[in-house]
Picture 1 (tube, rainbow, N blue to C red):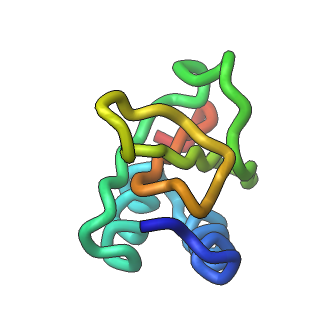
Picture 2 (picture 1 turned 180 degrees about the horizontal axis):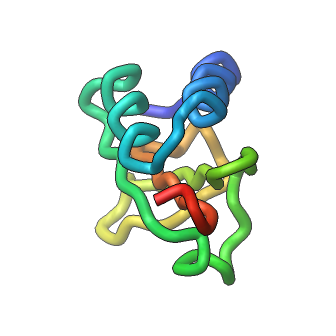
Length: 90
């Protein structure tokens, strides 16, 4: 699928405006129908570098093009999103 710079800018606006991770995931699913979006605690991904960082959330891109899904820093290869909530933004 892949994400454009405009897609990622829109995702950033949604994450900036979301009060909770649950709401952030809901808004991203509405904006990108058919794209898997999940959430996690930022501490669960502390060994990984987020693709983008926002005040309450980190955004990770997932490459699902092969048998095993993996995090990627390539928007063109990404087919799913992970929203990692910072403490207090569950």
